[in-house]
Image (cartoon, rainbow, N blue to C red):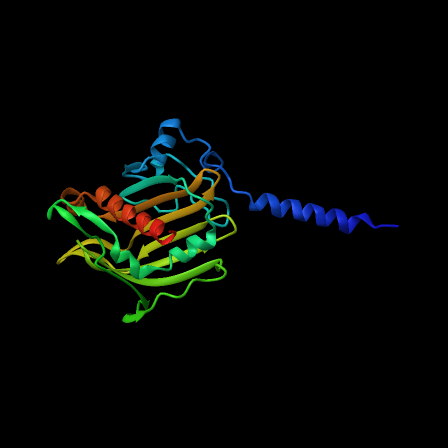
Length: 256
Protein backbone atom coordinates (compact mmCIF):
# COMPACT_ATOMS: atom_id res chain seq x y z
CA UNK A 1 0.00 0.00 0.00
CA UNK A 2 1.41 3.39 -1.07
CA UNK A 3 1.59 6.04 1.62
CA UNK A 4 0.12 9.23 0.11
CA UNK A 5 1.18 11.67 2.84
CA UNK A 6 4.82 12.27 1.76
CA UNK A 7 3.82 12.28 -1.93
CA UNK A 8 1.15 14.93 -1.41
CA UNK A 9 3.55 17.01 0.66
CA UNK A 10 6.17 16.81 -2.10
CA UNK A 11 3.66 17.88 -4.76
CA UNK A 12 2.52 20.82 -2.67
CA UNK A 13 6.12 21.85 -2.02
CA UNK A 14 6.97 21.69 -5.73
CA UNK A 15 3.89 23.72 -6.62
CA UNK A 16 4.79 26.34 -4.01
CA UNK A 17 8.35 26.64 -5.29
CA UNK A 18 7.10 26.91 -8.87
CA UNK A 19 4.71 29.72 -8.02
CA UNK A 20 7.35 31.55 -5.99
CA UNK A 21 9.74 31.43 -8.96
CA UNK A 22 7.26 33.01 -11.37
CA UNK A 23 7.82 36.74 -11.96
CA UNK A 24 5.11 39.15 -10.92
CA UNK A 25 3.60 41.83 -13.13
CA UNK A 26 4.05 45.56 -12.64
CA UNK A 27 0.51 45.87 -11.29
CA UNK A 28 1.20 43.13 -8.74
CA UNK A 29 3.87 45.40 -7.25
CA UNK A 30 2.01 48.69 -7.82
CA UNK A 31 -1.71 47.83 -7.67
CA UNK A 32 -2.78 51.48 -7.47
CA UNK A 33 -0.60 52.78 -10.32
CA UNK A 34 -2.47 55.00 -12.76
CA UNK A 35 -2.27 54.51 -16.52
CA UNK A 36 -0.50 57.85 -16.97
CA UNK A 37 2.10 56.88 -14.37
CA UNK A 38 2.57 53.48 -16.02
CA UNK A 39 3.09 55.05 -19.44
CA UNK A 40 5.67 57.42 -17.99
CA UNK A 41 7.44 54.52 -16.26
CA UNK A 42 7.92 52.82 -19.64
CA UNK A 43 9.32 56.00 -21.20
CA UNK A 44 13.05 56.78 -21.40
CA UNK A 45 12.86 59.33 -18.59
CA UNK A 46 10.64 57.20 -16.37
CA UNK A 47 8.04 58.36 -13.86
CA UNK A 48 9.16 60.97 -11.33
CA UNK A 49 7.54 62.61 -8.33
CA UNK A 50 9.16 64.87 -5.77
CA UNK A 51 7.89 66.53 -2.63
CA UNK A 52 8.66 67.78 0.84
CA UNK A 53 7.22 64.96 2.95
CA UNK A 54 7.53 61.22 2.55
CA UNK A 55 3.83 60.92 3.40
CA UNK A 56 3.15 62.13 -0.12
CA UNK A 57 4.47 59.01 -1.87
CA UNK A 58 2.32 58.09 -4.85
CA UNK A 59 3.17 54.50 -5.81
CA UNK A 60 3.36 52.62 -2.47
CA UNK A 61 4.95 49.40 -3.80
CA UNK A 62 4.19 45.94 -2.45
CA UNK A 63 7.77 44.75 -2.21
CA UNK A 64 7.21 42.02 0.36
CA UNK A 65 8.14 41.59 4.00
CA UNK A 66 11.84 40.78 3.65
CA UNK A 67 12.53 43.75 1.35
CA UNK A 68 9.77 46.03 2.56
CA UNK A 69 9.48 49.67 1.53
CA UNK A 70 6.93 51.89 3.28
CA UNK A 71 6.25 55.59 3.71
CA UNK A 72 8.45 55.56 6.81
CA UNK A 73 11.47 53.96 5.11
CA UNK A 74 13.10 57.37 4.65
CA UNK A 75 12.13 58.72 8.05
CA UNK A 76 10.76 62.22 7.50
CA UNK A 77 13.12 64.02 5.10
CA UNK A 78 12.73 67.64 4.08
CA UNK A 79 12.90 66.62 0.41
CA UNK A 80 12.32 63.36 -1.37
CA UNK A 81 12.20 61.94 -4.87
CA UNK A 82 10.19 58.91 -5.97
CA UNK A 83 10.90 57.41 -9.38
CA UNK A 84 9.96 54.33 -11.39
CA UNK A 85 11.39 52.92 -14.58
CA UNK A 86 10.28 49.75 -16.32
CA UNK A 87 12.90 48.49 -18.74
CA UNK A 88 11.69 45.98 -21.33
CA UNK A 89 14.41 43.35 -21.53
CA UNK A 90 14.96 39.63 -21.59
CA UNK A 91 14.99 37.65 -18.40
CA UNK A 92 17.03 39.13 -15.57
CA UNK A 93 17.74 37.34 -12.29
CA UNK A 94 18.32 38.80 -8.82
CA UNK A 95 21.82 37.31 -9.00
CA UNK A 96 22.59 39.32 -12.15
CA UNK A 97 21.33 42.47 -10.44
CA UNK A 98 23.41 41.73 -7.35
CA UNK A 99 26.56 41.25 -9.45
CA UNK A 100 25.89 44.49 -11.36
CA UNK A 101 25.81 46.35 -8.04
CA UNK A 102 29.27 45.03 -7.19
CA UNK A 103 30.91 47.09 -9.98
CA UNK A 104 31.50 50.14 -7.81
CA UNK A 105 34.49 51.43 -9.76
CA UNK A 106 32.55 51.54 -13.05
CA UNK A 107 30.20 54.19 -11.59
CA UNK A 108 32.77 56.83 -12.57
CA UNK A 109 32.08 56.07 -16.24
CA UNK A 110 28.52 57.45 -16.05
CA UNK A 111 28.08 60.94 -17.51
CA UNK A 112 25.55 63.72 -16.96
CA UNK A 113 25.01 67.03 -18.69
CA UNK A 114 26.49 69.88 -16.66
CA UNK A 115 24.53 73.09 -17.29
CA UNK A 116 27.33 75.26 -15.92
CA UNK A 117 29.98 73.63 -18.13
CA UNK A 118 27.60 72.93 -21.05
CA UNK A 119 29.00 69.47 -21.66
CA UNK A 120 28.75 65.89 -20.43
CA UNK A 121 31.04 65.04 -17.54
CA UNK A 122 31.24 62.25 -14.92
CA UNK A 123 28.95 62.96 -11.98
CA UNK A 124 31.23 60.75 -9.89
CA UNK A 125 34.80 61.21 -11.19
CA UNK A 126 35.87 58.45 -8.81
CA UNK A 127 34.09 55.64 -6.96
CA UNK A 128 35.78 53.06 -4.79
CA UNK A 129 35.13 50.66 -1.93
CA UNK A 130 36.76 51.42 1.40
CA UNK A 131 37.30 49.21 4.44
CA UNK A 132 35.08 51.22 6.76
CA UNK A 133 34.44 54.49 8.61
CA UNK A 134 37.79 54.27 10.37
CA UNK A 135 39.73 53.23 7.23
CA UNK A 136 38.71 55.90 4.73
CA UNK A 137 41.92 55.64 2.71
CA UNK A 138 42.11 51.87 2.65
CA UNK A 139 40.66 50.96 -0.75
CA UNK A 140 39.30 47.56 -1.77
CA UNK A 141 38.94 46.02 -5.23
CA UNK A 142 35.57 45.04 -6.62
CA UNK A 143 35.01 41.29 -6.16
CA UNK A 144 34.58 38.77 -8.98
CA UNK A 145 30.99 37.78 -9.92
CA UNK A 146 29.27 35.73 -7.23
CA UNK A 147 27.73 32.32 -7.94
CA UNK A 148 25.05 32.96 -5.32
CA UNK A 149 23.78 36.23 -3.87
CA UNK A 150 23.86 36.52 -0.07
CA UNK A 151 20.68 37.61 1.68
CA UNK A 152 22.51 40.66 3.07
CA UNK A 153 25.77 42.43 2.30
CA UNK A 154 27.15 45.66 3.77
CA UNK A 155 29.85 47.67 2.06
CA UNK A 156 31.43 51.08 2.51
CA UNK A 157 32.16 53.33 -0.45
CA UNK A 158 33.63 56.70 -1.30
CA UNK A 159 32.04 58.54 -4.20
CA UNK A 160 33.88 61.63 -5.41
CA UNK A 161 30.97 63.87 -6.39
CA UNK A 162 31.41 66.51 -9.11
CA UNK A 163 29.64 69.06 -6.89
CA UNK A 164 30.24 67.89 -3.33
CA UNK A 165 33.71 66.32 -3.38
CA UNK A 166 34.38 63.14 -1.39
CA UNK A 167 31.15 61.60 -0.06
CA UNK A 168 31.09 58.51 2.14
CA UNK A 169 28.24 56.01 2.17
CA UNK A 170 27.19 52.65 3.48
CA UNK A 171 25.48 50.41 0.95
CA UNK A 172 23.33 47.59 2.27
CA UNK A 173 22.25 45.02 -0.30
CA UNK A 174 19.35 42.72 0.58
CA UNK A 175 18.22 39.95 -1.76
CA UNK A 176 15.60 37.24 -1.98
CA UNK A 177 14.45 34.93 -4.77
CA UNK A 178 12.49 37.74 -6.43
CA UNK A 179 14.34 41.01 -6.04
CA UNK A 180 17.22 43.12 -4.75
CA UNK A 181 16.98 46.14 -2.46
CA UNK A 182 19.90 48.57 -2.25
CA UNK A 183 19.93 51.03 0.67
CA UNK A 184 22.42 53.92 0.55
CA UNK A 185 23.10 56.11 3.59
CA UNK A 186 25.74 58.82 4.16
CA UNK A 187 27.87 58.12 7.23
CA UNK A 188 29.73 61.43 6.90
CA UNK A 189 28.34 64.92 6.28
CA UNK A 190 28.10 66.16 2.67
CA UNK A 191 29.51 69.63 2.00
CA UNK A 192 29.75 72.13 -0.84
CA UNK A 193 33.24 73.49 -0.28
CA UNK A 194 33.22 74.82 3.32
CA UNK A 195 29.40 74.87 3.48
CA UNK A 196 27.68 71.82 5.09
CA UNK A 197 24.80 70.62 2.89
CA UNK A 198 23.58 67.32 4.39
CA UNK A 199 24.37 66.23 7.90
CA UNK A 200 25.69 62.78 8.78
CA UNK A 201 23.05 60.06 8.27
CA UNK A 202 20.60 62.63 6.83
CA UNK A 203 20.52 61.16 3.31
CA UNK A 204 18.85 57.84 2.45
CA UNK A 205 18.29 56.31 -0.97
CA UNK A 206 16.48 53.06 -1.73
CA UNK A 207 16.82 51.26 -5.04
CA UNK A 208 14.44 48.32 -5.51
CA UNK A 209 14.86 46.07 -8.56
CA UNK A 210 12.63 43.14 -9.49
CA UNK A 211 12.35 41.21 -12.76
CA UNK A 212 8.70 41.22 -13.88
CA UNK A 213 6.75 39.79 -16.80
CA UNK A 214 7.11 43.13 -18.61
CA UNK A 215 10.89 43.41 -18.10
CA UNK A 216 12.71 44.94 -15.13
CA UNK A 217 11.21 47.22 -12.47
CA UNK A 218 13.55 49.83 -11.01
CA UNK A 219 11.90 51.78 -8.19
CA UNK A 220 13.85 54.59 -6.53
CA UNK A 221 13.15 56.48 -3.36
CA UNK A 222 15.60 59.07 -2.04
CA UNK A 223 15.33 61.69 0.67
CA UNK A 224 17.50 64.27 2.39
CA UNK A 225 17.21 66.62 5.34
CA UNK A 226 18.88 69.98 4.74
CA UNK A 227 18.97 73.38 6.41
CA UNK A 228 16.60 76.17 5.35
CA UNK A 229 19.57 78.16 4.03
CA UNK A 230 20.67 75.34 1.72
CA UNK A 231 17.07 74.67 0.64
CA UNK A 232 16.80 78.26 -0.59
CA UNK A 233 20.02 78.13 -2.62
CA UNK A 234 20.24 74.53 -3.87
CA UNK A 235 17.60 72.60 -5.83
CA UNK A 236 17.76 69.50 -3.65
CA UNK A 237 15.05 67.61 -5.55
CA UNK A 238 16.94 68.10 -8.81
CA UNK A 239 20.22 67.04 -7.17
CA UNK A 240 18.59 63.85 -5.84
CA UNK A 241 17.02 63.01 -9.20
CA UNK A 242 20.27 63.59 -11.08
CA UNK A 243 22.18 61.20 -8.85
CA UNK A 244 19.50 58.53 -8.93
CA UNK A 245 19.37 58.75 -12.75
CA UNK A 246 23.12 58.16 -12.93
CA UNK A 247 22.94 55.23 -10.51
CA UNK A 248 20.10 53.62 -12.51
CA UNK A 249 22.10 53.99 -15.74
CA UNK A 250 25.09 52.41 -13.99
CA UNK A 251 23.03 49.39 -12.90
CA UNK A 252 21.60 48.90 -16.41
CA UNK A 253 25.09 49.07 -17.94
CA UNK A 254 26.22 46.42 -15.46
CA UNK A 255 23.44 44.10 -16.69
CA UNK A 256 24.57 44.24 -20.31
